[in-house]
Image (cartoon, rainbow, N blue to C red; front, top):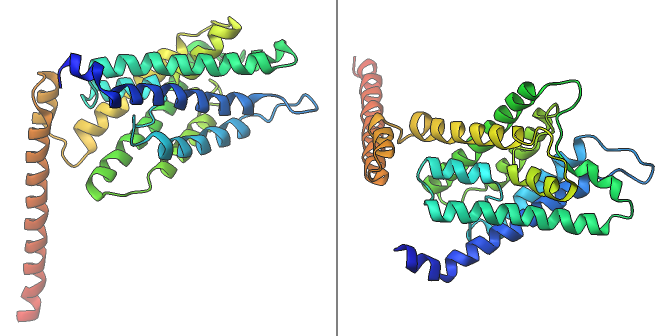
Length: 276
């Protein structure tokens, strides 16, 4: 499909709209869970972790078939780096995700009786850690999330209807618990929206560089080292902009043939003692 045809495609703009709405819902759930209770006490990370995990499962069912329910620029860039997404779609998805996050934060801000409460929306590096430590935690938390997403999609592609949304939801919750010292953002849009509305930009770069690095490392390591179709030829094809699908199909065929051969050899060896 050419660039002009894609821009005129109804499905293309449906997917972009799904990313706006999906990110709006996701960020709304997370921000709502960060608000202090009636006594002014915060629930810590337990509420955001549960809210983010459960809404991720729901969004997978709602928008998974439309846009992939990415709702995260880091995930989108990992898909772009592994050539599962074209540049135009990736750029518009990221714009849509940041727009959805900003709209969500703006709506919450207007609804707050005390505007000072909005400071809880922003991701900030805690006083007891430095930016480098927070960056490392964001890389680690996002790595495990995106590796799970790639693994689920690979299994879904091979096995058909596989309930992987639950695994992704658990991974989102685990990432928030893992990244407690950094805020466990794992999502640049989730940090960008509150920063726009509240004006809190301190260490904002941590929440872009960390998740993006973690996501790309996870995507590349899964696709070119751990997946069944991984091969040096596939990596070279990606770097030289050749057709990855042809190389991937050939790699899977060789892997399947190798598995069949090994199974036959084991069966033959097992039959030898019986014959003797």
